[in-house]
Image (tube, rainbow, N blue to C red; front, side, top):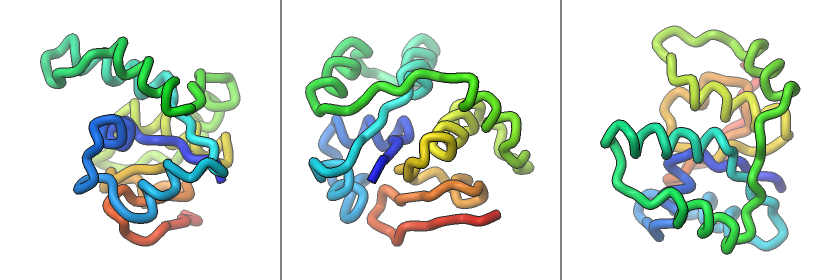
Length: 139
């Protein structure tokens, strides 16, 4: 199975936060048979939040830790941008990082590992961070 980690899922995993990243999501991420993707979009989001003072972390350490964990860094491709253009516009969900991550998960055929309350509103395979059941939307 291919997984694309939402930014908070990545940070919770690297922080070892078992309370926020539990059950099936943690098991899927640590399963050596699964390919875990980390988008440069998440790294960009971390950098933006660091600069804005909304997050305390070490970007270099995050990048190095994702490599040590064996995660694959996913760049942004034209196919991802076309998917973003086709993504439904959901009222009251204006987070551009979420939008592009969801478009990437769809284009890559990956389950999106996220706890974002808006993620189930999109046509993406979803694996909830809190151990809730997997969700596959056809919206």
